[in-house]
Length: 502
Image (cartoon, rainbow, N blue to C red):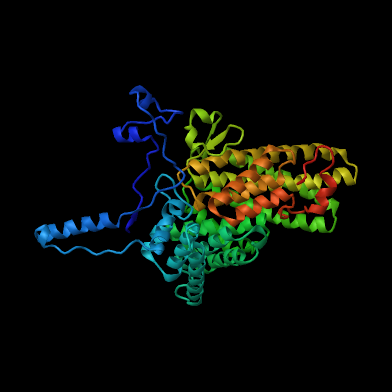
């Protein structure tokens, strides 16, 4: 590949880089420049990862090796002709830092290199290209090229699905996942039921067809985990799931998957099982709300409280690999020029974006669960004049506020983790939206979540982020809470001690 990333970019001033000394990047001048009484000309902008065209360098090295092997004088050799790096090549390379990651910062699609090496099918290659071009969409003709590549990838994937020999391959499932990622990035929240839903449900059905054999390789197990979580989360938070996770086949495969996992990763299976239980509760809550069945809601409140206690207990079983640090004084740890957006002068440091995302799945799960508790208890309190439900309402509101604040505290890490771009930031969209959707009207978390969604949308062009920010600003967010709707909440949110979506 002619394009290359030449290591970590030095953010120091020009003089420190020239002298090869550590630059502390203080303002208005670094300490090294002050010490030698030289003018400090400022620091590099770290916002973008440089991709260099190394074609000439690669050609020169290849030419030198050829000369050495032939033992010919330099004057007798023929100049090597090479072509500039194409948009397609750059698109493929774009996926490496933003989706695949490194050994230190593993990305969302860390299985791609192995998959592309073993089975570079037309469907998978075209899907990777479409997602890569989408990341480069701010260049001229980029969006058109991305849509064109997506159409090619869609045709290639449909062709692979029609062929019994390729329908259940890792490459085909990977292609479907990438197509759903493309739709997630380009669709507004109101459009989530279209292409993204079809891809997500199609990927989930493939899990059943692929059987137990898919769990025998690291790539297959990783694909199984991603697709299964995507499906159950879409059911709980997006209200779009196919409910395939309730099938006996998926349940049996999940047990096999658990036995193959490292002990540090097994908590993922426990959290997944609780998400399934939450989805079943959510269906019952919706039904009780539609039927105005207050007695059933009382039983559902008790069931929700038990599940919330189990979720809280889940955090006490986690190994040290899941732990994170809370930084209360960011100015003592971050140079001013690299400040990410920080909530209340506090942020978290995780061992990786995947761990941070799993924590945020836990937090948004508890937010949705406690918002259901809050709404049901509020109805019992106000409509039936049962004041014993008032403490339940207050407790649920407190948990929502705490979880929303922790989601906000986690966001800076996504900016400084080393995995910047679509591959990292798109994973915080729904936690931020849920936090902004359910936090109290006067909560700083609501305004901050809206601000960060706006920032991510404008910085990356992810339409989901832009649409979510607009919905929160308008005070008319999509109905994502089971048993709640705008009409019902408008009755209660003006009551003392109640939140509401405002």
